[in-house]
Length: 159
Figure 1 (cartoon, rainbow, N blue to C red):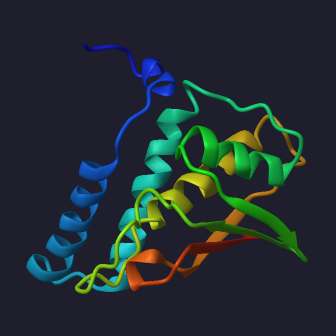
Figure 2 (tube, rainbow, N blue to C red; figure 1 turned 90 degrees about the horizontal axis):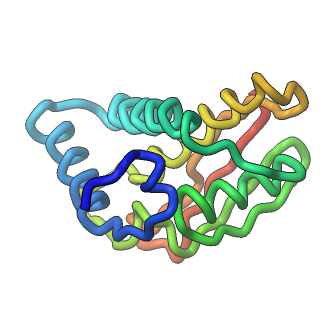
Figure 3 (tube, one colour; figure 1 turned 135 degrees about the vertical axis):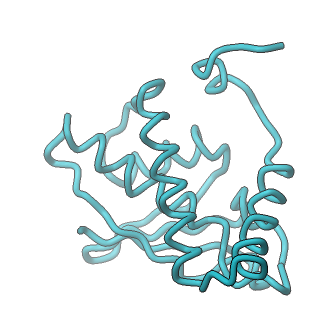
């Protein structure tokens, strides 16, 4: 049944086809277009940022602080729980159920969660327009389930 984009916020959805599509896209860029890893990461991050630009029009979260915001984003947008902690000037996120990196991928060297990292970077930036105390952040993926790890771990530093 068709609905509005706002209706998507209230629905549960499966990401299997999205995840598979992302890995077909990565493989296409790598094999057919001969695009390097760094550029593919950039394309995935940009994809996440574009999604954030649209998403902000339909949902603005309520949160207590930057750590709580990270948890709320994972729970609400990515429909997953994540451990979030602050360490020095970093926010560390650990997800054992990353929706875009469920399986080990032998022929893929770019984690799908680059899309999530791009989304989060842009979402923080957009929210900081209304809340100057919210820092702009830059993320780095430390580990990923597509490489056979038990978790995806990404770190955000203040930009």
